[in-house]
Image 1 (spheres, rainbow, N blue to C red):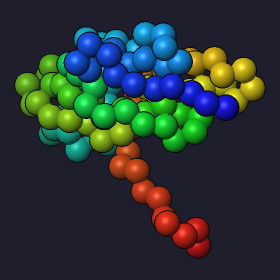
Image 2 (spheres, helix red, strand yellow):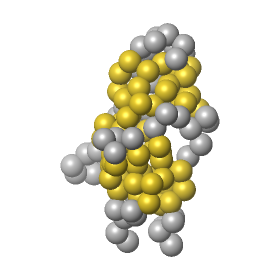
Image 3 (tube, rainbow, N blue to C red):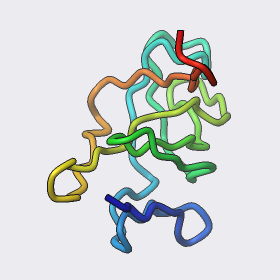
Image 4 (tube, helix red, strand yellow):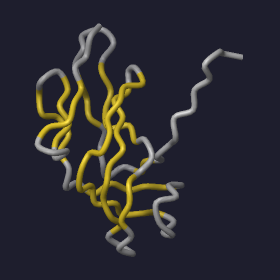
Amino acid sequence: MVVSVHQLDDGAWLSVNDSREVPVSQLWLLARHGFCGCELADFLAEGFVEVGVDWPDIEARIAGQCVKCGASSVTDWLTVGRVNRENGDFRSVVPSSVHVPERRTRLATPE
């Protein structure tokens, strides 16, 4: 199944299958993040920097700032939604839930 994923409007929107699905200006709760010194960061998303697919997850690195301490940076990879394997429908995650950004770690050859 082919899924089209890209940024629109200079990183203000994430488009999935030619439909605007995930906007910036949302508050994300980040745990175990390394983004700032806050244990639980209230992260205000300001722009998508990079998008990718780790099937069936749609992931992004997002620029923004912690509204608690004011730190500004770019997150590690965050899952922003998932594509249904059977019908291709996209479902975004709930940004106000607690999220844990992760670095992508893949081996070229499985162990």
